[in-house]
Picture (spheres, helix red, strand yellow):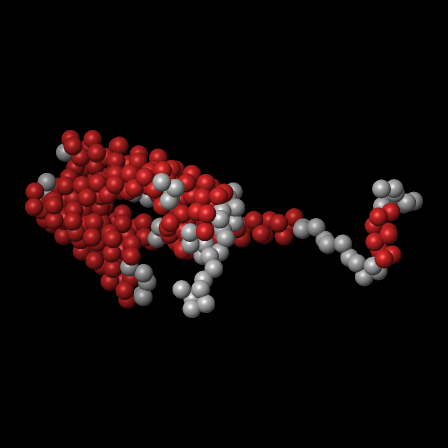
Length: 249
């Protein structure tokens, strides 16, 4: 290619002569690129937050444990503490029903609290209030690990319906599959820290330290796992939307 006087490429001049109406496509401005990246970032963050109930869902699952340990320290009665925690969980469900919000995370919290309350009252041991949650945490980590090993990472299973891609990431989007697998392993590592810290306290019968640490380790690890997932998805290929049948199924 040769340049004409003034530095204009000959090829561009020839194109203009053959097509006077031709206009070069403008390059994406820095502002537009930043806005597009910000939108993608927000969508990824919203998707992760929605899948795990958001901050409200985490609070619904954390506060009953705080109420239990406070009530137990005040009354030294397992039954009083258990009923206080169960009552708060039930209140969360009622409030969500009145506001016509999803009760998925609140209901799961009620189930766990009810089971812990029943075991602790049955045995008379306050530390047993936290046993179902500890066992659930261990089972959850094992389930995540197995799902990643069999190439059905649970993070993808959970987020697929929310992003509209369903399970296209398994066969049509290998980069997305790799990202979901990486995120799932991140959850295994981060969420696996809790039972490693709390189970020795449970076995030692240290109710106070167990209760306070259970509350302290409730939200931060989940926020960290969600942040890591968000960062991984930001660098992943965009989702391929699943095609629905004509009847919408």
